[in-house]
View (cartoon, one colour):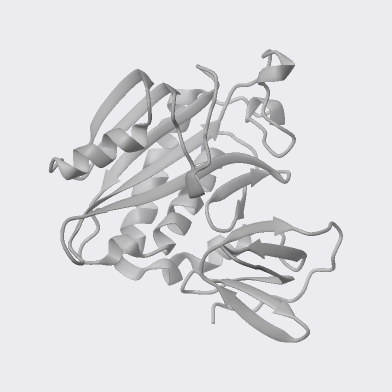
Length: 257
């Protein structure tokens, strides 16, 4: 894949730039980096705000064939790649929170957003993958530091050169994307599951009009979340996952069903 890399000092959103490029017919391989995003966003419309110089933020353009752009597991594949890329660049050990967050010691270090553009029924124009990773937050005023649920590479004692980190993430994203195109999420189920946060613990999933709770069994080969409550397994296709309490006993987790 030929890369077209662009660097911006300040933008509203790298996602918006890539989405517009998709609509304009730009080929696969466009990458837009930004030092600051005035209207950066994550999943479910949440804002991603970071002072200049503290985070690595970029969006890239993929054009998966057919109707596969709508496959939710593309975000899972990208999350695995980001976790691997962080570690390969010298960062700390990373866990994955379903469906699209990377955690270090239970705190968010990176997040992903996948958005597709469609031109006509089931005619995908492309996918914009947004990535945000907290890199260097030491020395900032307390008011500017991430909240208790977030952290940064340097705050974890693992400072990483941002250029090396960007290169590492892109290498791993390309590798996992190609693997996903060839074999889907099931081809990388095992390494994803091995990094999954809160396995065997009590969790809760917030849905648009309800909540589900249970013990987290893991993720299935189709990317759905597996919960167990009173001996009954439930699958969840989309929702917001949260840990209910610490210290629950781990369960034996079987293969992708």
